Length: 410
Ligand code: NIG
Ligand code: FE
Picture (spheres, rainbow, N blue to C red):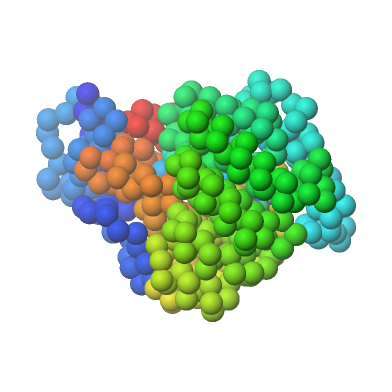
């Protein structure tokens, strides 16, 4: 079945070739076709071009005069499986406590761990699927979802099974990440080395054997996991076939990036604090920097220095970090707007970072991230817009009229 979309005011992120991630100045250009058509066959993009060359042979036709089409957002970093909420901590921060102070009092991640351990798999699935359905309406077509609120084998497996169910039941593309080293659970208090061994020897082998994760993640940060501990974990994960995506440099820069680049880690995420040594390390390898601007927004910490990274000719990806503690929102339209407003990324750079480049952070660049022949027909039809600048400019508005996932209107 072929469907023609005609009279597209502007078809955004059109690319013939999609083999390389965009770096530095390359991110400034967002290729588009004005007054365009798009032809899909079932779930695949088969043709596009200017209306002058519009095909006459198709099964059905949708006229979208005045509206634009762009690929769905790719959110390469989320924690949407969680129990309860952290609304009280939100108010505690308003009243003056910092994220670190709350954690040091036994709250933060450990607050979510306590809640998750006593929540059933069914309830977790119900809550996570409601979040996922909202994200799809907000234009997310590809998502990575992490565990990390169980921190024992049974509870982590419960989270991983919920992610597997989401993957099975929704047409959004899902990549699953085992975040075994998110924080030190209370039963390992004063035995950090024991917990690292437990993850390496008992959790990673089981998660990998069950085929429940594509990636491994750890929170490499002062007060959480050291460079040496994270290195040990990355090697253990690698030995079980899992690549790593690592949380680091959220509050402090302690040499984690250099170690991650050495191990060819797929992405390093957060980077609110970046040193010159970190930049030099990133320039030497293929590890992808991922910024999470709505986390900075929500907990009032510095924004990832996007200009510094782009001036160093590095690539950049934007993701939401949707989680109950630091970013209880996964709206990628707002992520893109925040990157423009607070990180001084241009709309072209921000859209590239949240679509085309983001696909590389999940190794899905052959299927998603651009309007390209042979890629999946997962795209957003906007409301009538003056230009695509309106997406970040009218921040907080919903620019989306309709979402197609794999050729099907949602
Ligand atoms: O990416 N920083 C580590 N992990 C999450 C926050 C988790 C939480 O507070 O629940 C993050 O911000
Ligand atoms: Fe995160």
